[in-house]
Length: 361
Ligand code: DP6
Image 1 (cartoon, protein in one colour):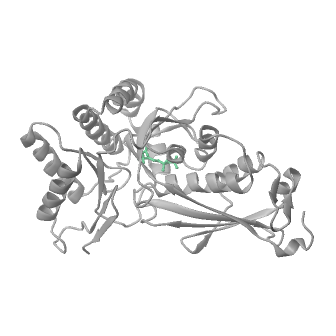
Image 2 (cartoon, protein in one colour):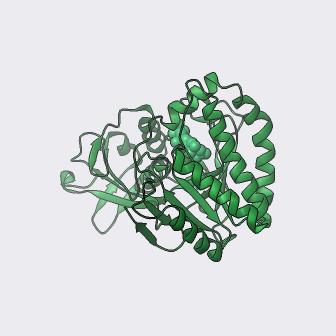
Image 3 (cartoon, helix red, strand yellow):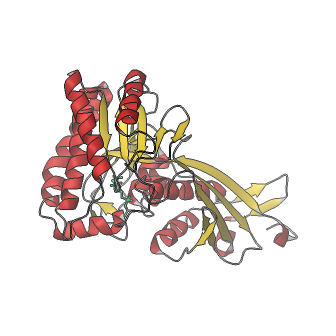
C-alpha cells in the first residue's frame, strides 16, 4: 500500500436505473440466496428518471464499513448487505492509481473498509423498485472500485443476493431473470433479451399515486404468499412459464397487443395472489383501480391497445404507451380524470424517455 497510507481515499461513482417487471417475480424458494420460484421479465427505465447514484470509497483511514442512504446512515449488518460485500470482496483484484501513487494489492481488500453513499432520485420503498436500483448500483460500483473482472451476468447473481429484482437492473432494455435450477444459485442470473434500442418507441409514464412507504414490504409479502396462498403454486408452475415464452416473442416482434395483454394480466394475477394471501395484502388503492378502468376502457374503445399498465408492490401505476402519440393522449386523459389538487391522491407523473417530472401536488 502507498506510503502515508492514512491520507488517501479512492472513490468510484455509478448510476443504475430501476426496472419494472412485466412478468412479475413473487415468491422465493431460498430466502438467503434469494432464489425465485419463477422466471420474470422486466424493462429497465431510462436512468434520467428513476435511478440510484452510489459513490463507494475506500481508505486506510476507514475503520469499519458504513453506508448512507439519502443522507441518513443505515446499518450494514443485515445479511443482504453482508452477502453482497463478501461476494465482491472475494473477487477483488489489484488496483493501482499511478497518478496518485496508490496501490492496493488483492490481499489488502480483506482489511480495508468501504464507505458507501447512495441516493435515490425517487421515493424509497414506495413500490417503485428502489431496492432494485439500489443493490444493482451497490454491486456495480463496488465491483468497479475493487477491479472485479466479472461480466454483468455474474454480477447480477451477486446483486440478486441483495434484492431479487436488482439482478435485472444490471442490463438495459428488456431483461429476463432466469430462476435457475442449482441449489447454490449459480445459474440464477439475469440475461438481456433485447437492448434499449430494440423497441424505443415505447414511452413509460409512472403515475405516482402515493410516495408513502408501503405497509408490507415485498420481502415479507411474498414470504406470506408462498406460505398461505393456494393460487401461487398454480401461478408459478402453470401460468408464468407459458407467459414467459409468449412475452419473449411479443418483445422480439414488438407485438404491442400481446405485450399489453400479458403485462396487464400478469399484474392483475400478481395482485390476485396478494389478495389470496392470509392476511390479504392490498398494494393497490382506489386511485390505482380507477387508473386500470380508465386504461381498459380506452384500449377497448380504440380496438387496438394503446397502453399497458402494471403495478408493483404499491399503488403507483406504471403505464407503458405504444408510442409518443398514445403517451400524449394518455397524459391528457389522466389529467382529465385525475386533475391536479383534486380529491384523489395522484400527485405526479414521471415520464420515461424525455425528462419531465410534473409535480402537481
Ligand atoms: C412486485 O426484489 O423487492 O416488484 O427479493 O425480497 O428484495 P426481495 O424482493 P423485491 O421484489 C420485487 C417484487 C415485484 C415484482 C418484480 O420486480 O419482479
